[in-house]
Amino acid sequence: MHFFKAGLAFNYIDLDNNRYAYWPAQDYFSAYEYNFEVQPYSFGAYVQDQITFEGMVANIGIRMDHFSNGDLRWPTGAPFNTVAFGPTTPPEDWLQILENGGSVIWDRWNAVDAELRAAGEPGLLQPTKSWTVFSPRFGVSFPVTVRSKFYFNYGHYRQMPAFSELYFYNCRWDKQGTYNLGNPNMPPIKTIQYELGVDYNLLDEYLIHIAGYYKDVSGESRGITINDNSGLLSYPFRANDRYRDVEGVELTISKNAGNWLTGWINMKYSYKSSGNTGRQLISENPATNEAETAFFNDDPDRPQAVPSINANVNLRTPDKWGYFLGGWNFSALPMWELGEIITETDIENPRNLAGFIKEFRWPDFWMINMKISKTFDLSLMKATFFVDIKNLFNRKVFFYNDAFSSDTDRLSYFKSLHLPNYKDSYYDAIRDETTGEYLYPGYVYTQEVTNPWSGETYQQGDVVKGEDKIGDLRSGDKLHINDPDNDIFTYGNPREIWLGIKFDF
Image (cartoon, rainbow, N blue to C red; front, side, top):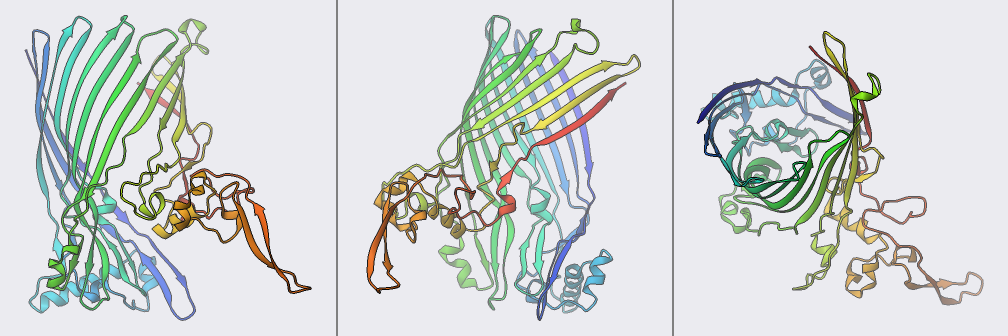
């Protein structure tokens, strides 16, 4: 009736990041550095009991996790110190320091820390926190009919924020100084998950899975601006007051048995909302800290629900075809997701009219991956040859969340498009009418032309041809489109082909 399990895990990571960049200018130089060395580690332990009683199965367990940054000290003791975080002139041998694996920024932080402590003040570099958390888990399932079962799962899950959020910093010596500062004191992200579902066995060949789920995620990282009284300092510091809610339903049909064809298809309809809480500004001025604008008071972002489809179709050649032709697996993994609705007010509702709803969507995401594998029995071992192909057809995937450098850049892109929606005069506020090439198809535009011989002026007209879609970028026949500024991040997921072989003894 009871099946007890327990386990331990230990992870130790050595991050030695030595990166810098610089370029010469006329009267000054500009340099960045991203140097740090940290040794975070984590320890985990769990215990679980699986209880079986008359067809009912219950899993009850708890997990303990301990996260530590080792003996790391971080510059959190004097956030308004302009010497530590403001613009600076580095020593003359700055390049030699960097080439030898040193850090100009950390040398400065250590010097400021020593000066503050010598003056009897708290130091700049403070010890970082460690965290010990407990996560309960519970699940139960029991048969409803001879072909179906009902189940319910509940659990807490904890994980540390990304290392880039914990230890990242960005300093440019000759201008603003500190541009970003990570925060290794952030506690683990907490996820509370609920799942309720039914499984049904159809014809002893197909498994139909229907489930509803809800995830409450809290403690994700975001930026919080730090300002001093002089106006020399203004940099984002990482805080952990961001939250997300994810809820949805899914249907999965699986075929796990078959001589030729197996696989599954998953159809999901999910809804996500997110927002920030707490402070969005920390100022050296106490009055500013008490102002309403120093806190997040916005409603959570509530985009519309998004449907998606994922599948895995596996074709296997029969073993009777022989040693070389039999046992080949060909798996296709198509995926599709409806494009997100654009929520920028200046695009979908430029006049900010109450009750006005106009749906603009980013392009749908779809891609097909493929995997080919074959296992050869070599008597003393088994060798599996495989080919993994990501984005089989090398479709260009528009990374619209990363491609634009600013809201202005995004708006400039939309102004340049020929969109059918722009026929509505409501969008006069954002449609660029400087020349006919920027107008929607069918638009008759006129411009004043002066005859160079007679000096006479008259109106000349033309009709705009062609039509664009959101997601189109500049090409030979679309030279009018103003592409995003972050061109290296415009497209993602290029085709990748990986060849490999795995040996099992």
